[in-house]
Length: 335
Image (cartoon, rainbow, N blue to C red; front, side, top):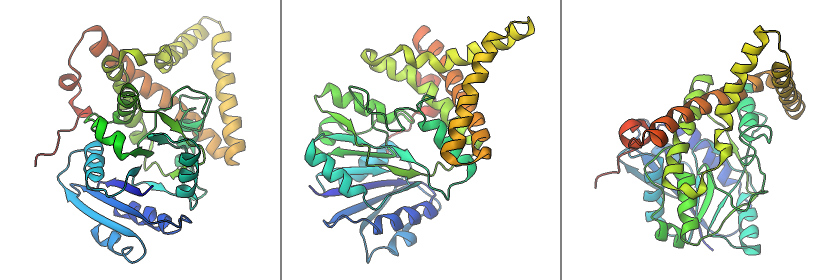
């Protein structure tokens, strides 16, 4: 097994430096290569990656901007390996990562895997709060946090692997973003390939975001979900409605409070108190515990509103997603 690590990047040379520095520390003794795909950046990382050329096998490509999915596909087309590992540029990789991947694939081979994400102590308080919200079993992020209690796992492209065979059979990622990773997983299942979670293959995901960027991100996640359900009806689940129902229920609880009905708002108070306590204990910080409440509300609200809008437009009114939501689709690079 020869690993090719694929890293698309857009205007983030500082992140590439941290990522490559973490790959230098890999305890994996076998050769592996790194493919960096500069996706039309104006602030390139070419000089940064060249600093690691003596310690890592790196190939660098610059191409016109066509989005992360198409850039990953481009990188895999250039790769020499037979198994591709994909990272986002804002990840830091533990030193045992490649060893854990090889060990897991030798024990039970699959053609596509994903791994969880964690937060480093050096991350900001907001980054840690968002990480908790995005990975906790108490929110919509339980699967990302490492739960393997599902028959099928949908890897996320910040930390995933795919065999050359599966890439060539599927054609790789589509042009929707976000949502290109679950779309790929579903198409792989339809082709007969297996996916799996490798819990030990985690990365430290920096999530380079503030509250505004986080809202925009989860809002897009919400808008994408009905589109994926339209493309792949067999994968539709009632749980996709939960964030929208959560926000609607919270509105009802607030209205009920005005009429002297306290029980609904008490339920929400108990839920947020539990979130606060668990985040505070895990992060050993009252501040991060409090920020987790903000992150979770934004997560539910942004996703719920985006989902409701897209569900009405795409599912009920049968509109074309690419026409109604062009911001979710990249145009393929012209060669």
